Length: 399
Ligand code: GLA
Image (cartoon, rainbow, N blue to C red; front, side, top):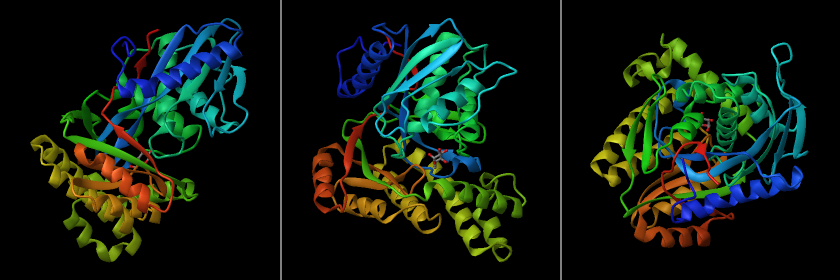
Protein backbone atom coordinates (compact mmCIF):
# COMPACT_ATOMS: atom_id res chain seq x y z
CA UNK A 1 0.00 0.00 0.00
CA UNK A 2 1.44 3.38 -0.92
CA UNK A 3 0.83 5.99 1.75
CA UNK A 4 3.14 8.62 0.39
CA UNK A 5 2.36 8.91 -3.30
CA UNK A 6 -0.89 10.95 -3.00
CA UNK A 7 -1.17 14.67 -2.16
CA UNK A 8 -0.35 14.93 1.53
CA UNK A 9 -3.33 15.38 3.83
CA UNK A 10 -3.04 16.44 7.46
CA UNK A 11 -3.16 12.80 8.47
CA UNK A 12 -0.31 11.98 6.11
CA UNK A 13 1.75 14.85 7.46
CA UNK A 14 1.32 13.56 11.00
CA UNK A 15 2.32 10.17 9.69
CA UNK A 16 5.33 11.37 7.76
CA UNK A 17 7.12 12.40 10.93
CA UNK A 18 7.65 8.98 12.50
CA UNK A 19 8.76 7.56 9.18
CA UNK A 20 11.24 10.36 8.69
CA UNK A 21 12.43 9.99 12.27
CA UNK A 22 12.89 6.25 11.84
CA UNK A 23 14.83 6.58 8.58
CA UNK A 24 17.10 9.24 10.03
CA UNK A 25 17.82 7.17 13.15
CA UNK A 26 18.44 4.09 11.02
CA UNK A 27 21.12 5.84 9.03
CA UNK A 28 22.66 7.15 12.25
CA UNK A 29 22.74 3.80 14.05
CA UNK A 30 23.62 1.55 11.14
CA UNK A 31 26.48 3.34 9.45
CA UNK A 32 24.65 5.52 6.94
CA UNK A 33 22.71 2.65 5.34
CA UNK A 34 19.12 2.98 4.04
CA UNK A 35 16.59 0.41 5.35
CA UNK A 36 15.16 -2.22 2.97
CA UNK A 37 11.85 -2.53 4.78
CA UNK A 38 9.46 0.14 6.14
CA UNK A 39 6.11 -0.74 7.73
CA UNK A 40 3.53 0.90 9.96
CA UNK A 41 0.69 0.00 12.32
CA UNK A 42 -1.84 2.46 13.74
CA UNK A 43 -3.05 3.28 17.24
CA UNK A 44 -6.80 3.28 17.77
CA UNK A 45 -9.61 5.09 19.47
CA UNK A 46 -12.61 3.16 20.69
CA UNK A 47 -15.89 5.01 20.07
CA UNK A 48 -17.88 2.74 22.38
CA UNK A 49 -17.72 -0.79 23.84
CA UNK A 50 -15.23 -0.51 26.70
CA UNK A 51 -14.03 -3.48 28.73
CA UNK A 52 -16.29 -5.71 26.67
CA UNK A 53 -13.69 -7.37 24.43
CA UNK A 54 -12.41 -9.88 27.01
CA UNK A 55 -16.06 -10.66 27.79
CA UNK A 56 -16.77 -11.76 24.20
CA UNK A 57 -18.76 -8.57 23.54
CA UNK A 58 -18.90 -5.85 20.88
CA UNK A 59 -16.45 -2.98 20.45
CA UNK A 60 -16.55 -0.11 17.94
CA UNK A 61 -13.03 1.26 17.41
CA UNK A 62 -11.41 3.02 14.48
CA UNK A 63 -7.74 3.03 13.48
CA UNK A 64 -5.98 6.39 13.84
CA UNK A 65 -3.59 8.35 11.64
CA UNK A 66 -1.22 8.13 14.62
CA UNK A 67 1.16 5.31 13.74
CA UNK A 68 4.17 3.30 14.78
CA UNK A 69 6.77 2.85 12.06
CA UNK A 70 9.49 0.22 11.90
CA UNK A 71 12.26 0.41 9.32
CA UNK A 72 15.02 -2.13 8.98
CA UNK A 73 17.03 -4.67 6.99
CA UNK A 74 18.03 -8.31 7.19
CA UNK A 75 21.47 -9.20 8.58
CA UNK A 76 23.29 -12.46 8.11
CA UNK A 77 24.75 -13.29 11.52
CA UNK A 78 21.46 -14.32 13.20
CA UNK A 79 21.46 -11.30 15.50
CA UNK A 80 18.56 -8.92 16.03
CA UNK A 81 19.27 -5.30 16.90
CA UNK A 82 16.39 -3.01 17.90
CA UNK A 83 16.48 0.75 18.43
CA UNK A 84 13.61 2.95 19.57
CA UNK A 85 13.34 6.69 19.12
CA UNK A 86 10.11 6.81 21.15
CA UNK A 87 10.02 9.49 23.80
CA UNK A 88 9.19 8.04 27.16
CA UNK A 89 10.52 4.55 26.37
CA UNK A 90 12.70 3.16 29.17
CA UNK A 91 16.50 2.87 28.74
CA UNK A 92 18.46 1.56 26.99
CA UNK A 93 17.02 2.56 23.64
CA UNK A 94 19.10 -0.06 21.81
CA UNK A 95 19.13 -3.83 22.43
CA UNK A 96 20.79 -6.75 20.68
CA UNK A 97 20.02 -10.46 21.02
CA UNK A 98 20.11 -13.73 19.07
CA UNK A 99 17.16 -14.55 16.80
CA UNK A 100 15.05 -17.27 18.53
CA UNK A 101 15.58 -20.93 17.74
CA UNK A 102 13.41 -23.83 18.85
CA UNK A 103 15.93 -24.79 21.56
CA UNK A 104 16.63 -21.15 22.44
CA UNK A 105 13.37 -19.21 22.76
CA UNK A 106 13.27 -15.53 23.71
CA UNK A 107 12.32 -14.50 27.23
CA UNK A 108 10.99 -11.19 28.56
CA UNK A 109 13.47 -8.83 30.23
CA UNK A 110 14.55 -5.22 30.13
CA UNK A 111 14.10 -2.67 28.64
CA UNK A 112 10.33 -2.99 28.82
CA UNK A 113 9.64 -1.49 25.38
CA UNK A 114 11.58 -4.32 23.72
CA UNK A 115 9.33 -6.95 25.34
CA UNK A 116 6.44 -6.00 23.03
CA UNK A 117 8.69 -6.71 20.05
CA UNK A 118 10.40 -9.78 21.50
CA UNK A 119 6.99 -11.28 22.30
CA UNK A 120 5.91 -10.90 18.68
CA UNK A 121 9.20 -12.28 17.37
CA UNK A 122 8.77 -15.30 19.64
CA UNK A 123 5.11 -15.88 18.64
CA UNK A 124 5.54 -15.11 14.93
CA UNK A 125 3.69 -17.69 12.85
CA UNK A 126 6.45 -18.53 10.36
CA UNK A 127 10.17 -19.01 10.63
CA UNK A 128 12.94 -19.40 11.32
CA UNK A 129 13.32 -15.64 11.61
CA UNK A 130 16.64 -14.35 10.28
CA UNK A 131 18.67 -11.67 12.05
CA UNK A 132 17.84 -8.03 11.34
CA UNK A 133 18.48 -4.41 12.29
CA UNK A 134 15.45 -2.22 12.99
CA UNK A 135 14.44 1.21 14.26
CA UNK A 136 11.06 2.13 15.76
CA UNK A 137 9.47 5.58 15.76
CA UNK A 138 5.91 6.49 16.68
CA UNK A 139 3.36 9.28 16.69
CA UNK A 140 1.07 7.30 19.03
CA UNK A 141 1.42 8.85 22.51
CA UNK A 142 2.84 6.23 24.91
CA UNK A 143 0.51 5.20 27.72
CA UNK A 144 -2.26 7.52 26.50
CA UNK A 145 -4.91 4.84 26.02
CA UNK A 146 -4.60 4.99 22.21
CA UNK A 147 -3.01 1.56 21.98
CA UNK A 148 0.65 2.32 21.59
CA UNK A 149 1.37 -1.26 22.71
CA UNK A 150 -0.74 -2.91 20.02
CA UNK A 151 0.66 -0.53 17.40
CA UNK A 152 4.19 -1.65 18.32
CA UNK A 153 3.23 -5.34 18.31
CA UNK A 154 1.37 -5.17 15.01
CA UNK A 155 4.14 -3.07 13.39
CA UNK A 156 6.66 -5.71 14.52
CA UNK A 157 4.53 -8.51 13.08
CA UNK A 158 4.11 -6.59 9.80
CA UNK A 159 7.88 -6.09 9.65
CA UNK A 160 8.49 -9.83 10.12
CA UNK A 161 5.98 -10.55 7.34
CA UNK A 162 8.29 -8.68 4.95
CA UNK A 163 11.35 -10.50 6.22
CA UNK A 164 9.94 -14.01 6.40
CA UNK A 165 6.36 -14.26 4.98
CA UNK A 166 3.59 -16.10 6.88
CA UNK A 167 0.24 -17.25 5.42
CA UNK A 168 -1.21 -13.71 5.54
CA UNK A 169 -4.13 -14.58 7.83
CA UNK A 170 -5.09 -11.28 9.49
CA UNK A 171 -7.10 -12.73 12.40
CA UNK A 172 -4.22 -15.06 13.30
CA UNK A 173 -1.88 -12.09 13.07
CA UNK A 174 -3.97 -10.12 15.61
CA UNK A 175 -4.19 -13.18 17.89
CA UNK A 176 -0.41 -13.74 17.77
CA UNK A 177 0.16 -10.10 18.77
CA UNK A 178 -2.34 -10.46 21.64
CA UNK A 179 -0.52 -13.59 22.80
CA UNK A 180 2.76 -11.66 22.69
CA UNK A 181 1.26 -9.03 25.01
CA UNK A 182 -0.07 -11.68 27.41
CA UNK A 183 3.22 -13.52 27.67
CA UNK A 184 6.00 -10.90 27.39
CA UNK A 185 4.86 -7.60 28.95
CA UNK A 186 2.36 -9.79 30.82
CA UNK A 187 -0.82 -7.74 30.23
CA UNK A 188 -3.97 -9.89 29.93
CA UNK A 189 -5.54 -7.62 27.28
CA UNK A 190 -8.53 -8.39 25.07
CA UNK A 191 -8.34 -8.57 21.27
CA UNK A 192 -9.71 -5.13 20.30
CA UNK A 193 -6.47 -3.18 19.99
CA UNK A 194 -4.50 -5.69 17.94
CA UNK A 195 -7.54 -6.47 15.78
CA UNK A 196 -8.26 -2.87 14.77
CA UNK A 197 -4.56 -2.11 14.28
CA UNK A 198 -4.41 -4.97 11.74
CA UNK A 199 -7.88 -4.61 10.25
CA UNK A 200 -8.64 -0.86 10.31
CA UNK A 201 -10.30 0.54 7.17
CA UNK A 202 -9.97 4.11 5.98
CA UNK A 203 -13.28 6.00 6.47
CA UNK A 204 -14.80 3.28 8.67
CA UNK A 205 -15.25 2.40 12.30
CA UNK A 206 -15.32 -1.39 12.82
CA UNK A 207 -17.93 -3.17 14.89
CA UNK A 208 -16.01 -6.18 16.14
CA UNK A 209 -17.79 -9.14 17.62
CA UNK A 210 -15.09 -10.33 20.01
CA UNK A 211 -16.76 -13.75 20.37
CA UNK A 212 -16.83 -14.71 16.69
CA UNK A 213 -14.05 -12.28 15.64
CA UNK A 214 -16.24 -11.01 12.80
CA UNK A 215 -15.97 -7.35 11.89
CA UNK A 216 -18.53 -5.09 10.17
CA UNK A 217 -17.61 -1.72 8.70
CA UNK A 218 -19.54 1.41 9.66
CA UNK A 219 -18.73 4.39 7.41
CA UNK A 220 -17.76 7.54 9.26
CA UNK A 221 -17.16 10.02 6.47
CA UNK A 222 -19.80 12.72 7.02
CA UNK A 223 -17.72 15.96 6.82
CA UNK A 224 -20.12 17.65 9.24
CA UNK A 225 -19.16 15.12 11.91
CA UNK A 226 -15.80 15.01 13.71
CA UNK A 227 -14.11 12.80 16.23
CA UNK A 228 -12.07 14.75 18.77
CA UNK A 229 -9.59 12.94 20.99
CA UNK A 230 -8.47 14.79 24.10
CA UNK A 231 -5.46 13.43 25.94
CA UNK A 232 -5.65 14.36 29.63
CA UNK A 233 -1.91 13.62 29.79
CA UNK A 234 -2.46 11.97 33.15
CA UNK A 235 -1.80 8.33 33.91
CA UNK A 236 -2.73 6.94 37.29
CA UNK A 237 -0.62 4.09 38.58
CA UNK A 238 -3.61 1.82 39.14
CA UNK A 239 -3.62 0.60 35.53
CA UNK A 240 -1.28 -2.35 36.06
CA UNK A 241 -3.16 -4.07 38.85
CA UNK A 242 -6.74 -2.97 38.17
CA UNK A 243 -7.06 -4.37 34.64
CA UNK A 244 -6.39 -8.01 35.62
CA UNK A 245 -8.66 -7.56 38.64
CA UNK A 246 -11.56 -6.40 36.45
CA UNK A 247 -10.98 -9.28 34.10
CA UNK A 248 -11.01 -11.78 36.96
CA UNK A 249 -14.19 -10.28 38.44
CA UNK A 250 -15.93 -10.66 35.08
CA UNK A 251 -14.79 -14.25 34.67
CA UNK A 252 -15.92 -15.16 38.17
CA UNK A 253 -19.31 -13.54 37.66
CA UNK A 254 -19.83 -15.30 34.32
CA UNK A 255 -19.03 -18.60 36.05
CA UNK A 256 -21.47 -17.85 38.88
CA UNK A 257 -24.15 -17.22 36.23
CA UNK A 258 -23.32 -20.53 34.53
CA UNK A 259 -22.06 -18.78 31.38
CA UNK A 260 -18.86 -19.01 29.42
CA UNK A 261 -18.59 -15.22 29.19
CA UNK A 262 -20.74 -12.24 30.19
CA UNK A 263 -21.66 -11.85 26.52
CA UNK A 264 -23.98 -14.82 27.03
CA UNK A 265 -25.73 -13.29 30.06
CA UNK A 266 -28.74 -10.95 30.11
CA UNK A 267 -29.63 -8.29 32.68
CA UNK A 268 -32.58 -10.46 33.77
CA UNK A 269 -30.26 -13.38 34.48
CA UNK A 270 -27.87 -11.11 36.37
CA UNK A 271 -30.69 -9.64 38.47
CA UNK A 272 -32.01 -13.10 39.27
CA UNK A 273 -28.60 -14.10 40.72
CA UNK A 274 -27.97 -10.79 42.51
CA UNK A 275 -28.21 -12.43 45.95
CA UNK A 276 -25.36 -14.85 45.13
CA UNK A 277 -22.96 -12.16 43.93
CA UNK A 278 -20.87 -9.57 45.73
CA UNK A 279 -22.06 -6.01 45.25
CA UNK A 280 -18.88 -5.18 43.32
CA UNK A 281 -19.18 -8.14 40.93
CA UNK A 282 -22.83 -7.28 40.31
CA UNK A 283 -21.88 -3.76 39.25
CA UNK A 284 -18.96 -4.95 37.11
CA UNK A 285 -21.25 -7.35 35.26
CA UNK A 286 -23.99 -4.71 34.93
CA UNK A 287 -21.49 -2.47 33.17
CA UNK A 288 -20.41 -5.21 30.76
CA UNK A 289 -23.92 -6.42 29.91
CA UNK A 290 -25.34 -2.91 29.38
CA UNK A 291 -22.21 -1.77 27.49
CA UNK A 292 -22.50 -4.65 25.01
CA UNK A 293 -26.12 -3.61 24.43
CA UNK A 294 -25.17 0.07 24.07
CA UNK A 295 -22.47 -0.77 21.52
CA UNK A 296 -24.87 -2.72 19.30
CA UNK A 297 -27.39 0.16 19.52
CA UNK A 298 -24.70 2.75 18.80
CA UNK A 299 -23.63 0.94 15.62
CA UNK A 300 -27.25 0.97 14.40
CA UNK A 301 -27.55 4.68 15.27
CA UNK A 302 -24.40 5.42 13.28
CA UNK A 303 -25.83 3.59 10.30
CA UNK A 304 -28.98 5.79 10.45
CA UNK A 305 -26.88 8.93 10.92
CA UNK A 306 -28.54 9.46 14.31
CA UNK A 307 -25.65 11.16 16.05
CA UNK A 308 -27.80 12.35 18.95
CA UNK A 309 -28.62 8.79 19.96
CA UNK A 310 -24.99 7.77 19.43
CA UNK A 311 -23.81 10.63 21.62
CA UNK A 312 -26.27 9.83 24.40
CA UNK A 313 -25.02 6.21 24.41
CA UNK A 314 -21.43 7.48 24.71
CA UNK A 315 -22.31 9.49 27.81
CA UNK A 316 -24.20 6.51 29.30
CA UNK A 317 -21.10 4.41 28.61
CA UNK A 318 -18.89 6.91 30.42
CA UNK A 319 -21.18 7.03 33.45
CA UNK A 320 -21.28 3.25 33.63
CA UNK A 321 -17.45 3.04 33.42
CA UNK A 322 -17.22 5.69 36.13
CA UNK A 323 -19.82 4.30 38.54
CA UNK A 324 -20.14 0.56 37.91
CA UNK A 325 -16.77 -0.40 36.47
CA UNK A 326 -14.78 2.27 38.36
CA UNK A 327 -12.07 2.76 35.75
CA UNK A 328 -12.48 6.50 35.17
CA UNK A 329 -10.73 9.28 37.14
CA UNK A 330 -11.57 12.90 38.04
CA UNK A 331 -9.62 14.31 35.08
CA UNK A 332 -11.53 12.18 32.53
CA UNK A 333 -14.88 12.98 34.20
CA UNK A 334 -14.03 16.66 34.01
CA UNK A 335 -13.07 16.48 30.31
CA UNK A 336 -16.38 14.78 29.49
CA UNK A 337 -18.40 17.32 31.51
CA UNK A 338 -16.69 20.32 29.87
CA UNK A 339 -17.15 18.92 26.35
CA UNK A 340 -20.83 18.19 26.99
CA UNK A 341 -21.48 21.85 27.85
CA UNK A 342 -20.78 22.91 24.25
CA UNK A 343 -23.83 23.00 21.94
CA UNK A 344 -23.12 20.80 18.93
CA UNK A 345 -21.29 18.15 20.96
CA UNK A 346 -23.20 14.87 20.62
CA UNK A 347 -21.36 12.78 23.17
CA UNK A 348 -18.12 12.22 25.01
CA UNK A 349 -16.57 9.43 27.06
CA UNK A 350 -13.32 8.00 28.34
CA UNK A 351 -11.71 5.63 25.86
CA UNK A 352 -9.35 2.66 26.40
CA UNK A 353 -8.47 0.96 29.67
CA UNK A 354 -9.04 4.05 31.86
CA UNK A 355 -7.40 5.62 34.94
CA UNK A 356 -6.17 8.47 32.74
CA UNK A 357 -5.38 8.73 29.05
CA UNK A 358 -7.92 10.10 26.61
CA UNK A 359 -11.54 10.98 26.05
CA UNK A 360 -13.27 10.63 22.69
CA UNK A 361 -15.87 13.23 21.70
CA UNK A 362 -18.30 13.10 18.79
CA UNK A 363 -19.25 16.57 17.61
CA UNK A 364 -20.34 18.81 14.77
CA UNK A 365 -17.20 19.78 12.87
CA UNK A 366 -18.23 23.44 13.17
CA UNK A 367 -17.87 23.39 16.98
CA UNK A 368 -14.52 21.57 17.15
CA UNK A 369 -12.43 24.72 17.74
CA UNK A 370 -14.87 26.06 20.30
CA UNK A 371 -14.82 22.75 22.19
CA UNK A 372 -11.03 22.68 22.28
CA UNK A 373 -10.96 26.26 23.49
CA UNK A 374 -13.50 25.56 26.23
CA UNK A 375 -11.45 22.55 27.40
CA UNK A 376 -8.22 24.59 27.36
CA UNK A 377 -9.86 27.23 29.52
CA UNK A 378 -11.64 25.03 32.02
CA UNK A 379 -9.67 21.78 32.36
CA UNK A 380 -7.37 21.55 35.36
CA UNK A 381 -4.56 19.90 33.37
CA UNK A 382 -2.71 20.36 30.09
CA UNK A 383 -4.64 18.60 27.35
CA UNK A 384 -3.49 17.57 23.87
CA UNK A 385 -6.03 17.37 21.03
CA UNK A 386 -6.36 15.27 17.91
CA UNK A 387 -9.13 15.68 15.35
CA UNK A 388 -9.04 12.32 13.64
CA UNK A 389 -10.44 10.30 10.79
CA UNK A 390 -10.75 6.52 10.55
CA UNK A 391 -7.49 5.37 8.96
CA UNK A 392 -6.10 2.18 7.44
CA UNK A 393 -4.77 -0.77 9.39
CA UNK A 394 -1.15 -1.93 9.26
CA UNK A 395 0.78 -2.05 5.99
CA UNK A 396 3.95 -1.40 4.09
CA UNK A 397 5.27 2.12 3.52
CA UNK A 398 6.62 2.78 0.04
CA UNK A 399 9.62 5.01 -0.47
C1 GLA B 1 -7.15 -1.98 26.84
C2 GLA B 1 -7.04 -3.42 26.35
C3 GLA B 1 -8.19 -3.77 25.44
C4 GLA B 1 -9.54 -3.43 26.08
C5 GLA B 1 -9.53 -2.00 26.62
C6 GLA B 1 -10.78 -1.67 27.40
O1 GLA B 1 -6.99 -1.10 25.77
O2 GLA B 1 -5.82 -3.60 25.65
O3 GLA B 1 -8.14 -5.13 25.09
O4 GLA B 1 -9.88 -4.36 27.07
O5 GLA B 1 -8.42 -1.77 27.48
O6 GLA B 1 -11.89 -1.67 26.56
